[in-house]
Amino acid sequence: MSAASTASVLQEIPVDLGDRSYPITIGAGLLADASTWERVPQASQGLIVTNTTVASLYAERLERAIASRHAAVHRVELPDGESHKNWQTLNLIFDALLQHGCDRKTVLYALGGGVVGDMAGFAAASYMRGVPFIQVPTTLLAQVDSSVGGKTGINHPLGKNMIGAFYQPALVVCDIETLSTLPPREFSAGLAEVIKYGPIADAGLLDWIEANVESLMRRETAALAHAVRRSCEIKAWVVGQDERESGLRAILNFGHTFGHAIEAGLGYGEWLHGEAVGCGMVMAMHLSHRLGLVDISWVERMTALLRRAGLPTVGPQLGPDRYLELMRIDKKAEAGQIKFVVIDRPGSASLRSAPDALVREVIDQCCRPG
Image 1 (cartoon, helix red, strand yellow):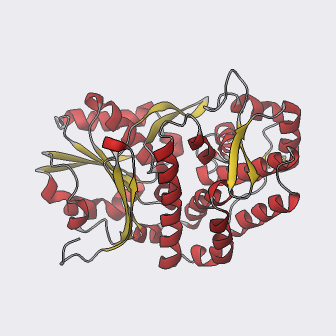
Image 2: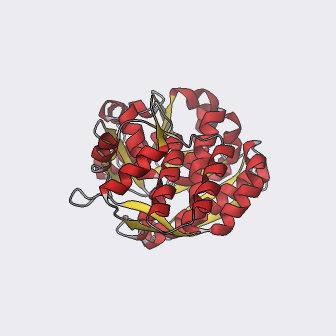
Image 3: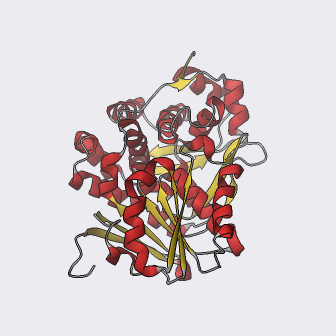
């Protein structure tokens, strides 16, 4: 940062992927500071991809901050919500790129949460077979998870994130000041993705979250900075080992197999992604217990923490048959056999299959009618 900078960089974490490596910058006041963007590739045009909610809060700040990097900065505002993560909305980005005559050096800026980041990244991967893009996540969920690692895509009515590409950003900028405007429900949804890193990779982090969950819920800067930093460190390390999810990276989907079934079964947007993942983690913990991997006290501990974070811990009663049908479409499924991320012991996870009868028992135990 320049001497005149008003931003505060709290941490910079590298994502080590050879010639596709990039930094994650975490700090306060980064979005509006021109010096934040000095590493952005020079290009005649930039396109900010955002949504109708975030645009009114942060789009003009970003436009001013990146004005020196581009001769022209354009903006496209997408409808807000998971229900719009589809081909029709994706085409709005392509429409804007083509209408402005954008070339293959045009830089896309994904300003928003996970839905915006996934769609802007997919558009960047596809337009002219690949243009640079920057992740500017404004939600907790996006800062600690979806903005890092290069997963991009859209939903299909039959499955979440089933159409997409691995495509890495050139830079991730996490301005924790943007978290102050998140509605409480959205903030809690993001905490689910913070909490997941404890049982799968760092038992010490789980201890810290338990001790500091109230500070996180109050959105205290120091607590948020630590949670975002440690989450990004873990994800960056995992992605560096397994960029395309051929093995280790699958553990990051703890709770997601059940969670994606909840989202698809209820209709995208009925539950937030983090809410479904939180509930999915409870179900995955019960499955881990029934497989003889963890003690019931560990299940109860995780359930209590998720409740303290304001997350649902009882799933909707879609029916075991519907859950199984949806989970067989999951990307981790192989030849119709569902694979679950389970906890072997605190801080360690693996990918396993389980008998349908056992999964049905978990669903019956963890779901309620209505």
